Image (cartoon, rainbow, N blue to C red; front, side, top):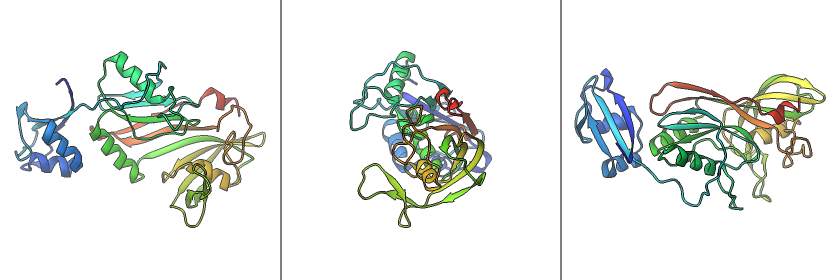
Length: 295
């Protein structure tokens, strides 16, 4: 159906006799705001026949919800940059972001952004979808960025990651020979009072937990796999510096002036439950060439 995003489910036995609204709210965790949009501007069918939220469903019924499309956010210039697409379907777009590219325009109102590249790709491919970056990366960090194409996918994935479910792993190159070879850093983080950007470890900060595993040591450098168990700003960079091994090239946290001219951090693995199909997805992005050269 043109102008809508289609969500389709086959009703399981345990939902027999429930109303459409109850099934969506309880079984599919549809938020109240999304349900209001469906009621006001969307459409519902059961077995290809129009239905309402109060209608009951039976085992093996095919329920379709049509969410109205949202326009691409305003103020994002088109940027002609080919995307490295790792996964795509009607609901999600997962890409491998190159370094030195902001996800969205910042205070400088950059004209070259990942969002602009996605807009160009959508226009060239005839895709009508919005831009919801569920997992953002710093400008200099490369790797996996997950983009929801509609509000329901965004809502479900954001909720999934907010509970620290699934798996987010990064690979980083740090200064010094890191010992021990593996462990977990428990150290709360907050923004430094005198800075609008820099964060630090402090007893008054928010809970932050990072797992680490050393993959290789060479020439006073360590290749380290990091696992995020929380999602604080600059978490890996702050925890690495706190451990005495800042990320190479990180001019904010103590290891500046090292080739490749950016902090050597890459989001390389992401595991999550798909917001619509509810199947586990594992996405990986190869380490970029500039980081390979450092080791």
